Length: 131
Image: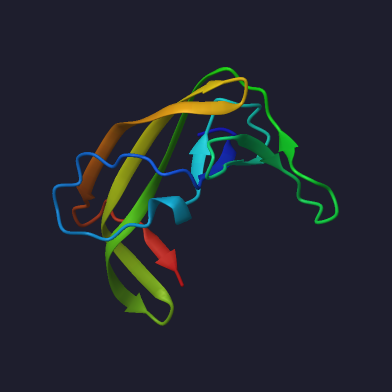
């Protein structure tokens, strides 16, 4: 799987392909990307579409990025879970969600939906989540 960076997107963007009645707050999700340095750094696309690298140090300010190019970012959202033990759940289905954002000098010009899939997992292929 390898290293990656995290990215959040506070900018409004199109959601295409859901097709089922589901509530997902896309701007609250944490996404992954392999289009930066893959050093487990944190990035944010703010509401105005500007790209910043977040500092882990609360006293340092975020760094405005001047990236030009496409950034793909993706995540999955657990949809249906079954409790199997105290604090342990079996994930029966989830949503795979992928977007691509085009940047010019650190400003997002456009975000497109790349892929949205609803995935159901058969017995034996399910993963577990501790809550």
